[in-house]
Amino acid sequence: MLASTLIALLVGCEEGSRGAGADGENAAAGKSRVPAHSEKATVPPLPIEKYLLDTGQELQLMKASKVLITHCMAKFGFDYVGPSFNTTENLSENGTNRARRYGVADVKTAKEHGYHLPGVKDGNPEASAPRMSDAEIRVFIGDADPNSGVRSGDRSNGKVIPKGGCSGEAMRKITTDTPHDLASEINKESQAKSLSDPEVVAVFAAWSSCMKGNGYSYTSPTGISEAVTNPGPERTEIATAVADVECKKKTNLISVWHGVESRIQNQMIGQKEEALGSEKRHMQAALKIASQVLEETS
Image (cartoon, rainbow, N blue to C red):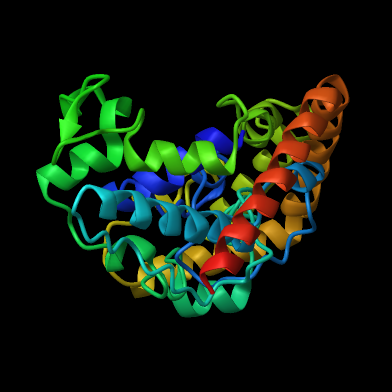
């Protein structure tokens, strides 16, 4: 779990490949990320959350990895800067992204921001990451990226590039587990399964009927925000978002959907409890190492 998580965080920060994920479909995609918005969740916790890294833990791993990468890159003559990881986030949030897992859920947020994410530019780590030169990227990523052209044993400035580059070396020092992400898979798959559950299908139909009564034609609340392309909330978008939230409340959609998904997650967790427990132990061990790395450099 942690190996794949660190790859996503370290490489994602440098390549700017992480998306904001504005609704339930994207929020449950199982992608490790530090959220770039400050919206707080009003939805109760989901069962899988006890096996997922929260934002504060992700930041701890990234900061420790950055320290190790900086030391490694310096050996090759590069002054690695990397992202600053400044954030104003609720550090207890995690990959379930409950604030938007079931779409916009709060009337106040809908009235102020429509389907847009509040403070989306605040504390965005990739915005503060300087672009690296091609030579630096070769050492940073090594043979982990086939497009880098780096092969095992290749050198830079007379030194052998580590397997997976300096980012790979940092990852191995923090965690030695195999790249598996069972918790995130459950996080993603549970929502996909919930969409075909009779209770969810029925509450979507009730929500759709409510929206139709307000002059909107949508079969389900999923994907509405993806159609929003304007840089900021507009009057029509805000009106739609407010109607969306009001219909969710009227039909009890979020409570029903959350209940169904919680049941599905509990079933999936029960089938994989031993493997999930192993992932969690690796996660705790990695966090301990990360803490030690940061203490040594403080």
